[in-house]
Picture 1 (cartoon, helix red, strand yellow):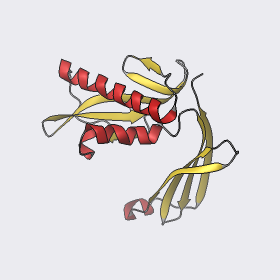
Picture 2 (spheres, one colour):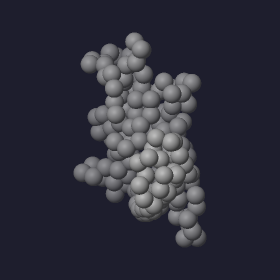
Picture 3 (tube, helix red, strand yellow):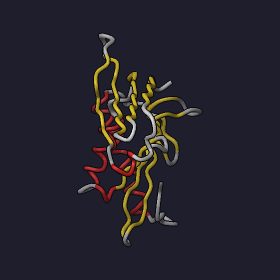
Picture 4 (tube, helix red, strand yellow):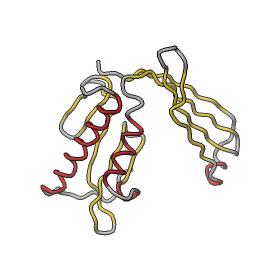
Length: 164
């Protein structure tokens, strides 16, 4: 969720957003080898088409404790706040680390829930040998979340991310 939006952006804020978009695009192109993206005013998609964009990145400015910070989200699902990082470069690198492995790849997402214990997520990509290779995995075992995991389950989703 986005909090504390600045109602109007000055030139400096717009420049920061534009620079952040450009830095992220350049880093993703360098890491993935893909340099064609779908760009509209206010967002960039790294997969899909103009009608159905996927890996849709939006960057905006948010205000916290009287200071303006960058905020980014991908597909209204995962978000990053600049204040969580040492500097803008670390903020951008975290976003790139999430997006770059997905670009132009087939990805398997697995979410495993273990009753009252944890939620484990993992991302895999399909390599040239038709084998699934782990990109990353995370385990959330916070005591508060454990209360809401009422049954065991495993959800698997496979997506192919490419510009159409």
